[in-house]
Length: 384
Ligand SMILES: *Cc1c(COP(=O)(O)O)cnc(C)c1O
Image 1 (tube, rainbow, N blue to C red):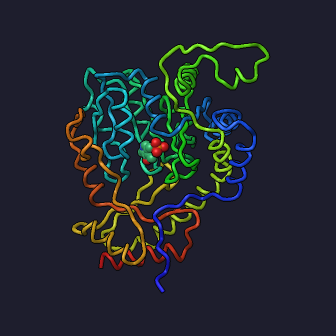
Image 2 (image 1 turned 90 degrees about the vertical axis):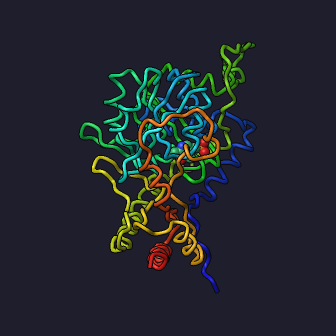
């Protein structure tokens, strides 16, 4: 009998999350309410951020972050093309133009040395991605952006629990460094609420705007109206959005957050195990962690040896019951960007090479040592 297929990713959740969702459902308050407020407090504490605002997903978080940074029609935002398409799309949602810069070969993250050539008089912000959970070089990016008056927005969709060293001290992604960080709770990330997102910032004015915009620009949140002994009439002070997270999702998220330290510990062990199993494979490039960064290992990405066919390797592994994904996409190569306004801020050759020459191996909490050995053996055979 064929052994079961090993998936590329799988969320780690169970009865506590189901009970929490049930608690919210039976409480009589199901949309944004007390569970969302508690989830925000607990998330802020977990990453040591002064403010945390929950929204419907990371794409809407990025949209609000860009709006707070003042990005509007005709503006340019420097970012990586080598990212999930939501990064670039959020810029487009503001009517602005993504300016794509290349990534570093070893870290798959935005190359700070590429920023200078991408700047124009229309540049309004830098959108930096912590790709697959490895922190990007925020120090170099912030040192570049701040003197030019450019806000730094962190796409931290994959980077919950990842850490970066700043002034000799380790801090979590989401603690103040850039101007705002945006997280995702999609099932492909570590902590999941099905769908969901979070914005963290040290800027009270931006946090106030996020809260206003996520709920239709309503001056008085419905939780406040609901709890008031006086009749309250609300105003709609700006054209906002419905970007709310629900209390059912937030209740799940609070349980997921309790699991985060165990999730990360497990993934660090598994990443070390992959390194052990794969370091002797000739020509295979294993992921690098700079000495100032600690990944949460949202994904484990390996670079195939020169000349190996990505599709053939992935197919050979699938034939052996191992699911993989190709390297992170490049937005500028997608049909949606064929005629859309965007600009290359320089060469994108490393971005394209990473998409075409890397694959993502299975990694999830329940994955056993034997599963990892099966993956390593299948990869060896596929390359042989
Ligand atoms: C997943 C992801 C997003 C989008 O997150 P959603 O919560 O699904 O909207 C954005 N950027 C990156 C880098 C991602 O990996």
